[in-house]
Image 1 (cartoon, helix red, strand yellow):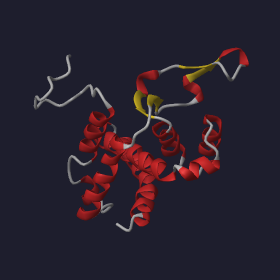
Image 2: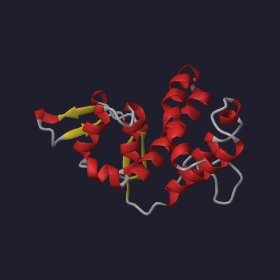
Image 3: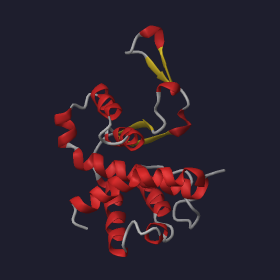
Amino acid sequence: MRPPEVGSNEPTYFPTNWKQQVDSDVGLIFKDSFWLDRGLLSVVQQERIRSYLLGTSGIPVNHGVCVFDLTIANAVICDSDYDRIFLLDLEAANVAPVPFYQLACIAADRGPESKETKAFFEGYGVDSREAGRISEELNLFTLYRLMRAAAWARDRYPGLLEENIQRTKPVLESTLKRNSW
């Protein structure tokens, strides 16, 4: 299947840049009244969160390969040399802003304050001081990743929906509180 022509009304299945990816994902997240119906957002909050998530496309950073299913089960450590790690199972990979999106994938999966997240950040070269400096971007990308996962579960795997909602709620509530929305 070829991607749709530029300017066509067909959905873009193969985004060619991060802005297209964000627009597509935010459209999926807010395609219906799901967040309102569950009482997780008011109409005003939903519009503010939508704008907040769309802001991920405007952050001027480098882009690189990020994997949201990054686990030891999807990697091979060559000859016990931790400088030679090869990733397998890259079907859950995309090109996204680094380091934010990769860090957010780990934080979304393990929890922003978990010891696993902190260990990953340290291994990635982001110490607690640097994490504090980029905390707003990390929150933004973590919320984006969590809400995207919930939208995916809603549409594709309802058995994971409640788990994804429970992961999303604390970050969503914290974002609303931090921004007085």
